[in-house]
Image (cartoon, rainbow, N blue to C red; front, side):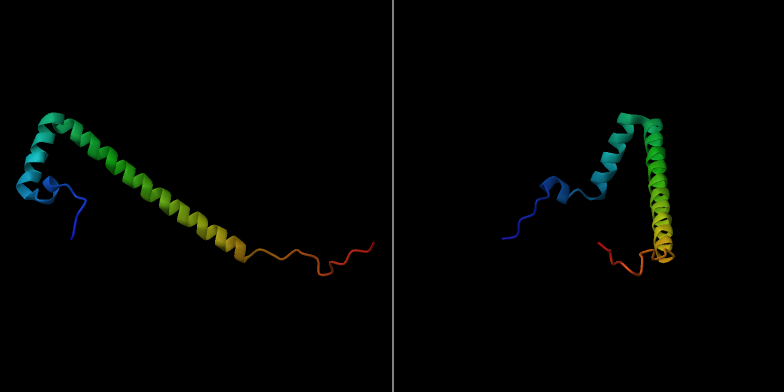
Length: 81
């Protein structure tokens, strides 16, 4: 028996249901609030992409530095007691 965890009202929502939900949200919050919210979401996505790019650049710099590191261990490690 195949059972899903998705509630029944979400499975058959369709395009008309999504349009009704969008209209209700628009009426409840107003165009200005939704515009501000989408602007903040856009800024968050931009900041996330910038952080990922900076992290990638930092990782590449670390790898380059590790490749150019010198081996400074002494060739003769015997201690005289």
